[in-house]
Length: 370
Image 1: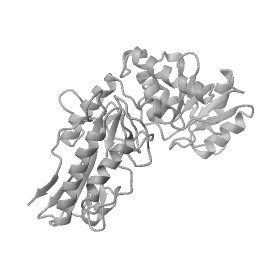
Image 2 (image 1 turned 120 degrees about the horizontal axis):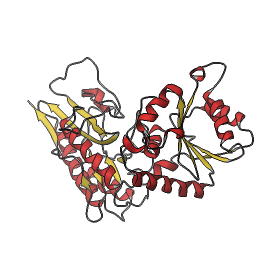
Image 3 (image 1 turned 180 degrees about the horizontal axis):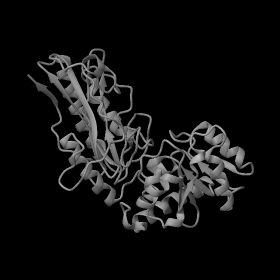
Image 4 (image 1 turned 30 degrees about the vertical axis):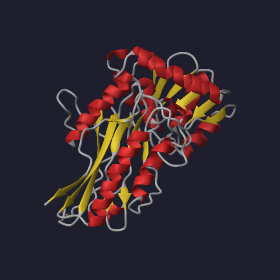
């Protein structure tokens, strides 16, 4: 199908491939094997729920990338990637969850056929989708190759978003405001990379619980952490609802959190650092005696389960990543205290000038329902 079904045009993919190859050259990598489905999609447009089996993108220093995966999923690649059909390779189904063979044996033969048997091969070692066994089999099958840890190499190239990517995130934000997957107008919603996190009461003291069969009760707060998604681009948004009159410490914390968010947005300017945002938030929270040790933000954009973060920079005191126009983050200063939890967050865009822009337009407060 070529570019017919890909989400972006040729110029956008040329930009991405060029950035990645420069990073490969700096890292001393001859050929990259990217298994993170977000990185696969960013480089090629591939979009399918097939990441439970081994698959990836082979990116040499010359020529178009190659998508490699299960033979039946090659049909999905034909429908979604921007490359020509001859850049799609499928391995036999006999490799899938086999006790006698492994897909990496097929990959090793493919790399050998391409002339990379003795190359410096970049692999994403710290990745949900690249197992210890996969690495062991690939190494044993390519004894003359040198493996280079390319963890987050592509992720860092994704940090500054193009105008087209930002447009997709704005569409995702409109869906986030509706708290659903139905989309807005002709902009259809997609499944998010994280399930809705909606704990209530004591469960809300933990950041990553989902839901249970208990009813929402008066005297308890429920935070809603979710994201609209458009063509795999996210714009997470969290708000908290309290049934009945909230305790005063929660009211005070919510006000401080709003002040901290506003101070952080002011600090989130091009040329400042990620730690500046975290420190601005911390100062506001410390006024009411809250010391928050966890990071309070991370980059977002294109993503697949189990996480909508890009796993690079963080909003925290020890991170000094310089903010650049086009970077996008989930500014996420959730509070998970002894008796209750509270989340008010924003997805933000670093602008050319001035403070960060928020993607969503939802009042920033603790919502109280009688």
